[in-house]
Image (cartoon, rainbow, N blue to C red; front, side):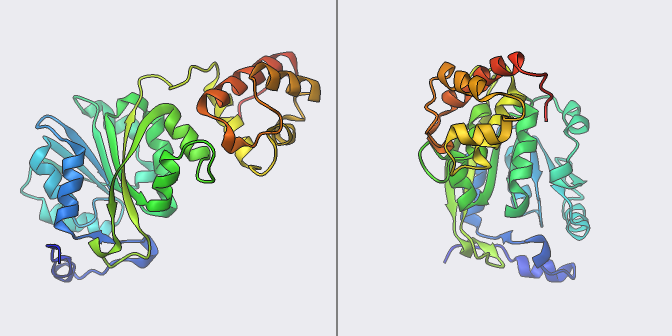
Length: 292
């Protein structure tokens, strides 16, 4: 059996229990914790922003390798535990905040270099946090995120499969993404009913595919996958028909070299980029388009 932290005693010490409503599952397997820190590849001058610090098991190990750790925790009770446990450690700063609504504009200027983000993300808010991280671009060095295995599969999915979709495209457009480590339920207390996986993301300095309008690109991706069973021409018509005539839609598909009968999961990043740019030409010929 793997060596584990005695989280039960720490919870008992502070009179706490894991909150099911908050999906609190504490990582207790020391070998997994060590693997995550190794995968973060930290240096003495690195700043780490840890999302969902919990009881501080990973926080303590990150602080040994990094110069500074900002441990973000939204649970007031857990934040109190963290302040108590790390009171004597000047390398660790406790920030009681919601990772989904984290104010990066206030946080980043206080750092000498782009920080490394590490976090164990609850499934129901993971995508919101990922899109928030994407908005920061190269202001963040890299992220190491533990998510539900199914989400990790979607993050790295390639065209042609059912897992390929909005998350895959928007993430891979702006970052290098790779799976790092599988984490079994036995590594947590209490044990979740799902498998977890650690994914590493490195933001790109510029979008992977050069496009003229990122907002339109995102809109096209969301629109087509909102009706992913439809052929691409039909889903575009359903979403842009009030703005573009059928003739302009057909011209855009031809200009982008996209067959009207394909479905969205068959299109690569490059094809979505070409389609977005081609639709932009059509929109300039149609009535004015406002970002949505």
